[in-house]
Length: 161
Image (tube, rainbow, N blue to C red; front, side, top):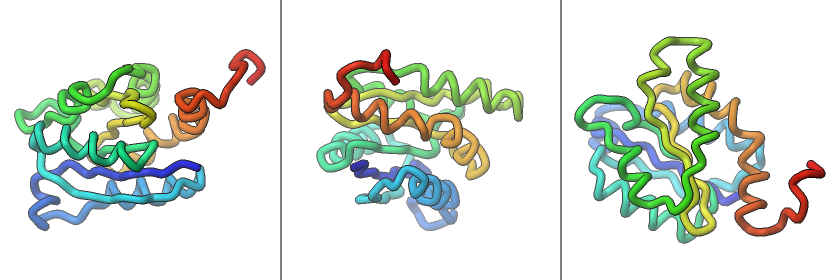
């Protein structure tokens, strides 16, 4: 079973100045893989706070999806915080999301999403816009279950799949 946590990274959202539409899109998309959403938080764009929350959420979730803070503005530090936490980077998730997004908009090249494993938890950064979140999750959603099975050691022969 997938136990998912959603972490929205937004200064304005954390102050209640902006509705979190991206987090809502993640909730909807996670229904496709029958994930149990066990946590949902909105926090500010602060590297130390993001790092702490990722580690905390990974104690009970085996999937953490973040949204926001992946661009190039001075406050966008989600990728750096994620790299502070993960033990194994999985660049394929981010590369696939950027490649598919680039087919839709050249703005995708400014995305700095990071994906990787921390202990037995898959962490995937998603962009901040609801439209981009939906598009990116459509690209990687089907791979999440397989990767989590690999992390748990429940897949014996990848060549047969």
